[in-house]
Amino acid sequence: MTTPILTCTGCGATKPEPDGAPTDLFPSAHCGNCPPWTCETCGQTCSATALCPCWISLDGMTTADIKAIFAGDGTFNVNPVSNP
Image (cartoon, rainbow, N blue to C red; front, side, top):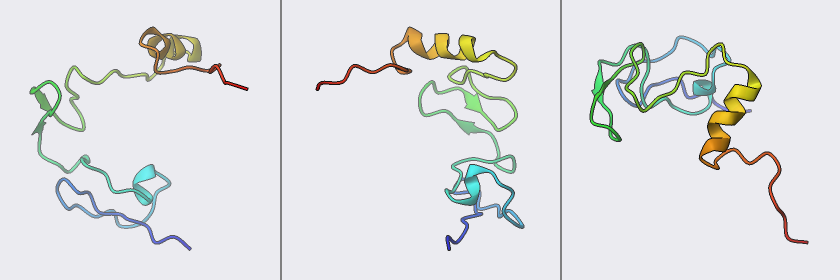
């Protein structure tokens, strides 16, 4: 059995119980309880409710549009070339 990790590494807030989120097994670097922080990539202010410009929200997008975003920079290769 896996012991859940329920504590945020950013602020130390602890969830009262597992809720099915990935943070049940892997600690979150930031959560909804964290104060705003400076993004290490762009240097702008970021928070759980107001993400910096580095983040792209995929909420409400179709699967095809999401694939197109990742295919544009080559990070989402759904048909990788393999060497036999």
